[in-house]
Length: 219
Image (cartoon, rainbow, N blue to C red; front, side, top):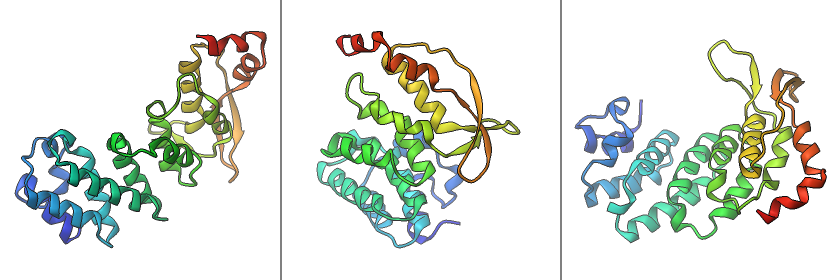
């Protein structure tokens, strides 16, 4: 159950503190008042992790066009502060805010490039999913370390384990380079001994080292 600050925040939207009844669209369509924004800023500054997590969800669901510039700046400042928190849950929540408010963060690209190497699986996954929002045109090199990413998970209930980030990065490289590499799966072990499937990156390496690679940047 959420704490007092986030209870108060969500009460503005639905009249009670049942956070499960709140959707992104409902928050987006809520008329904003100074009281709501002030309660949001207070919750984002809370020392209670659950308050901060729910406040991040609330802030990332807002219609930015309805916010005053000074409120945007305050939200961005708090988001960057939360991002430096060592708790993985809070860092992952802050990533949503950073992505949403990226237009107002001059260092957005550098922040995201650093987070691609973050120790937290959820954080890396979110940053990877938004890669095209900060990558330069035709830039795939920051994705190459994901060939050895250790995060494994089911992709459907009861499915085998997969190296999810490895496969997602491979898909992005295909999209960026305009290639359709031959695909086949191999079974590998993670650093903790779990066996999981991954798309083999050998066809990518073959292309990267081939004669045709030198024409890529000329597109």
